[in-house]
Amino acid sequence: MLLDLSVTLNSQTPVYPGDPPVKIAPVGAIERDGWNDHLVSVNTHAGTHIDAPLHMIANGKTLDRVPLEQFVGRGRLIEVGKSFSLEEVQQANIQAGDIILFGTGMSEQYHESIYFEAYPVMPTEIAHWLVEQKVKMVGVDTGSVDNADGFPIHKILLAGGVLIIENLTNLDQLAGKEFTVYALPIKLDLDGAPARVVAEIKT
Image (tube, rainbow, N blue to C red; front, top):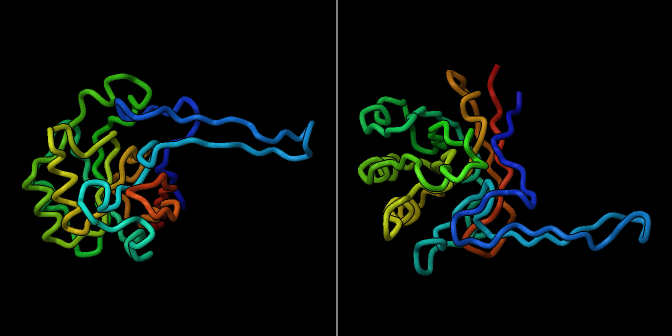
């Protein structure tokens, strides 16, 4: 069974405060041209997307230089609600190469202003611990893994080779499940890119 963990990209997609909105304009119409075609203008960190090291680390890797194997791995869901706990994370049977998804429930408020204003953020000690465990990726159902000046969580994870997925959805449907995550971004020579993130649930 496949479960889509991605939000839809369209002109109503919420963006991080200060980022440009998603713009979509038709450039071809069946009635006039015989085909439909569109021009899409989208920030590299809009919607469900993956952060590459270059996003926060000078001379860091761009997404196209990340091995494909890093975008696929055993998934582990940790439902944190409104508060992260290092002890809970350490007891989640995390292994090297895992993709860790943190469920806060914020995706239910994706189109509300509170989504980018009042979301839980993991403490730095959790970010350091995840790097030490050599996980592949960390994903959240919020607009960012940071809410502090200097973006410390981003820098800890990305400097440690851990990619970041933001703006996930449907994480509650993974509770109690064993699953594999496929998080494949557009192959851009850039700091990040929108991605289609899917969980394959074992039955």
